[in-house]
Image 1 (cartoon, rainbow, N blue to C red):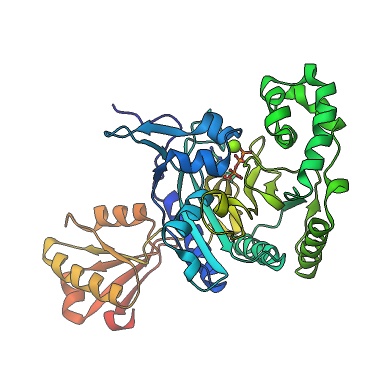
Image 2: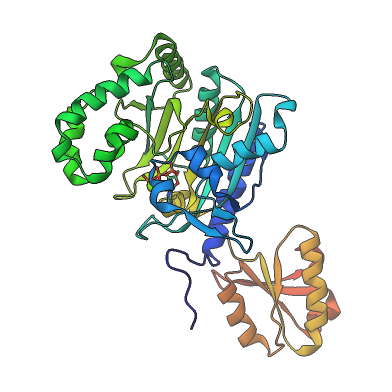
Amino acid sequence: MIATVKGTRDILPPESFVWNRVEAVAREVFHSFGYGEIRTPLMEPTELFTRGIGEDTDIVNKEMYTFPDKKGRSLTLRPEGTAPVARAYISNNMQTLPHPLRLYYIGPMFRYERPQKGRYRQFFQIGAEILGPEEPAADVEMFSLLVDFLNRLEFTDLAVGLNSVGCEACRPGYRAALQAVLQEHKGELCVDCVRRIDTNPLRVLDCKEAGCQPVKKLLPSIGGHLCETCSAHLRFVEEGLNALKIRFELNDRLVRGLDYYTRTVFEVVSGRLGAQNAICGGGRYDRLISDLGGPKVPGIGFAIGQDRLIEILPESFKAKVKPGLDYFIVPVSPNELLPAFELAAKLREQGRSAGVALDGKGLKKGLKFAAATGAVSALILGEEEIKNGEVVVKNLATGEQVKKKIDEL
Ligand code: ATP
Ligand code: MG
């Protein structure tokens, strides 16, 4: 037997019906806000991620699927969606399009991580990006979009965390303040955090190592270091969320695992997920496109982890996803097989879903198949029924049977 690659899995029906429904709701919501789908390649030049995401991040340091192709070019399976969107913006000269540009994506991402509950090597993200506006109104729109989607999935118990990680003007001061405290406690930090003191001290706030937690408590928060522009930006976002009645918590320790964020960062967590509790991360990336050699165009976006989202999807939503057919047609003998196909075609034309018992082995077997498909009703078609333009409708839940004219179905 050939097994799946470690950290990957097959998603089968009926579960895939739930995945499809979630994606359909995402598309409906995104389209209702004027977002268009962008489909970028699953593989990109490695340089896109080393330059875009940053060298001293978990993703670039340890999680990328990087390999040479037959000509020796270094390729990487995309670990996230924002850097590819920024690359596509530049490659396709998208600055000539009307702005703001509103884009979304749905698809697999790849990270070489230790597989566990809620953490896979191939996982799926649903993400959105708005490119162009520097104004905090764009940040508010992002939250509005995100919360609208989560509400339609009937979530009621998610928590939104919000912070600002500052900008080129104020972050250096905060970095220095962090470095001063971190130097004093160097001996208590993990090896990664010791390195981060110089390369990226903000990332220490995101470290999950048990040993680093006490030091994290001693670190200053960014709040007092934000410049006037960044503070005003954050205040506007807070007011916007209040006006939209979006519940959130200001968390001045929140930083995100990617280097490209500026100002607004946020995440959505669920209390029902255990250790891997984040279902969504996002933030503003005003320098990403220009860092990759494009024009100076700000952006903001989020990415939802679809695997985790589905893991905690409310039962009320799942109950409405109906994988079964409306009708399953059971020909009583092989003579009724072709008329059964015709009837099925007619029902499908009317927008119903219908299947046919293919083996023509009679009523008992056919009804057993019908029940196994999860169909709502079986339609029994015998010689006499065909003669009269009728069919026997059997409700598979109650077992109740009635004869009906085919036209009345
Ligand atoms: P985590 O802290 O869980 O490692 P992250 O900060 O690496 O998350 P992001 O890069 O922000 O994650 O990706 C956005 C979302 O994608 C996460 O909130 C999570 O729901 C999901 N995600 C990230 N990595 C994985 C993975 N390996 N398997 C499943 N889902 C993932
Ligand atoms: Mg991660």
